[in-house]
Length: 221
Image 1 (tube, rainbow, N blue to C red):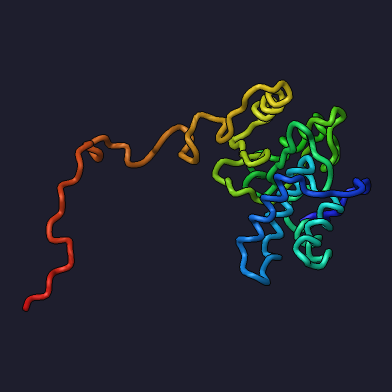
Image 2 (image 1 turned 90 degrees about the vertical axis):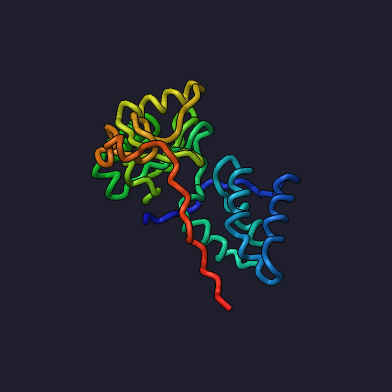
């Protein structure tokens, strides 16, 4: 895991707007008295969303004070989880490129090269127009569909340099994009279709007959 530090330039302050304040209060209310600090991840997430996709130092401090917890503990959470961005991110897309072994074996280094050339040579730096940023992350959980990237809450899988470039082009132009596998397969099914249990006679298409006597036997008097 790389060292994660706060951005050098920080805004002067942070305060939840009325809508997010109400959400934060509902999140805190989920926990019993004395356990409000358990809402830290939910509140940091709301703060990041309000702050344009990244967590500032004033936002982390604000959440810590709201939960009556030591600032260093809130900072520990914010710097540990890569779901929290500690630097300003692209206004169109912040691209998280998985760099764990399955994705590396399937070509994620080529995806990161595209990010270096098209967005910025260094991670956590927005592009010149401010639209895009990128970062390498650990396993995002779709190893069968490697290589993949995550943008917001959506994942784009089975990428090649060509399809990844097209994805960036579509996002830049404001065209709709389709998450999931970027090849002709559904979810994590085998590429090229199924290779086992392909005999049609195995699936007659008729419901199985009702089974009798499957209930628990009644005790005789």
